[in-house]
Image (cartoon, rainbow, N blue to C red):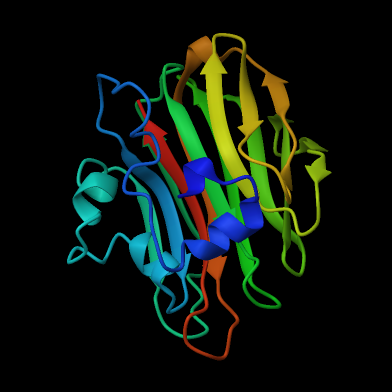
Length: 228
């Protein structure tokens, strides 16, 4: 399972055949709003895309992953060979610093696979407190950037070859903190200061997943799983 893996690329590839029902199930359950995906773009015909699609209500994992968040989240799917979700946007209210986000993005299956996402943390006056971005940086690779706004960003460091995005984002009153999970191609840890005690909502834009494989089994995805 991915929780026990020490190789991010191999573990994420293996999820074409297996999917962890709840990425936080080994931690203590958290009270409050339901856990589940709040952001999910899934493209391609492979199983890893199917499992991350809000439209696959027939799957046994759907209730745990989408049942509590389907009305509030930002979701898009293109579950065909060569699928491309296009871009989508939504502002999601109800943010608290108690939340822990599990971020997983994958574009390491086939040449020209693509993923992207921008997130801006907003206060009650819709002022931007901080932001981060995920974007394709090369074939089989992606890069996170972070900053006080989308106009003022710092590129995160990466480790290994073909870096993906796989880790947790935690929050406190004065900042957000990305913690990578596992070793291999990934982003390195980073923090961004900001008055997160004033954040009330998050504006997500440019959410996309694109699978370029000409054969069945390909996939790419951009996801955030919230543990409130």
